[in-house]
Length: 239
Image 1 (tube, rainbow, N blue to C red):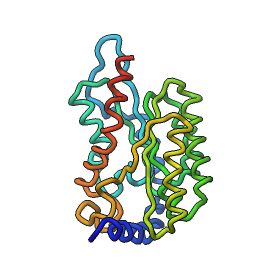
Image 2 (image 1 turned 60 degrees about the vertical axis):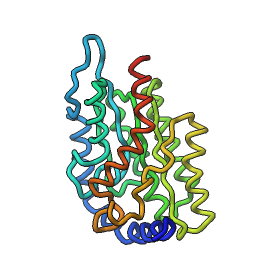
Image 3 (image 1 turned 90 degrees about the horizontal axis):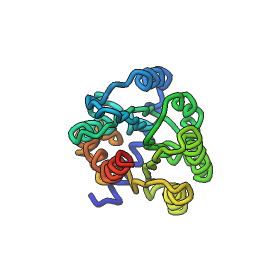
Image 4 (image 1 turned 120 degrees about the vertical axis):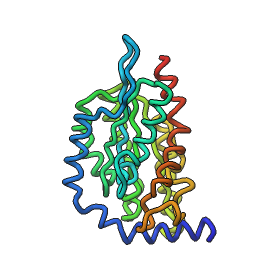
């Protein structure tokens, strides 16, 4: 199966299971809020006079680690790498299954009650699968970024890019992908070109539903994120 065929299969699986991911969202959001308030993931003690900084991963089921244990999702895997290097950061997983960019825009305010040093924004896939106008997705993601920076002017923002499969139509697919490249340029933020690179459409790396990464798939997501976030964490620590 070539990459195009894999992507088409991935699209079909996403459409079939999208509504299922939305069920129970209220319960999951409560759990996310509790984690944000009490998260103590990092086991690294900051050197004297050095504050432990906070990384918030704000996304949907891909960030939440749908179908897996919390410590198997890519934010927790990023934390393991941070701890192994002795970097003074703690990762907070604020992923919510079924989340859209509009939903993220609505719930970002409560998250801003705590200081944020690095903000990884992973939203928009559910917008694309609903055929929502990419201009709306662009506006919502842009507003989330603006709100984070308003409260945390020194925060580093990382945008996780997403793509739609060819089955969504050439024009829509192109406009959707440009949401992320345009935002990265317009807001001057770092970009992960495609979060699911190397995972989307690969049956061996996705769970039975065909869309949510397995443990190994999440490891690849962590690799994709780490490539972009590692130099930012090192530089921010030194600043």
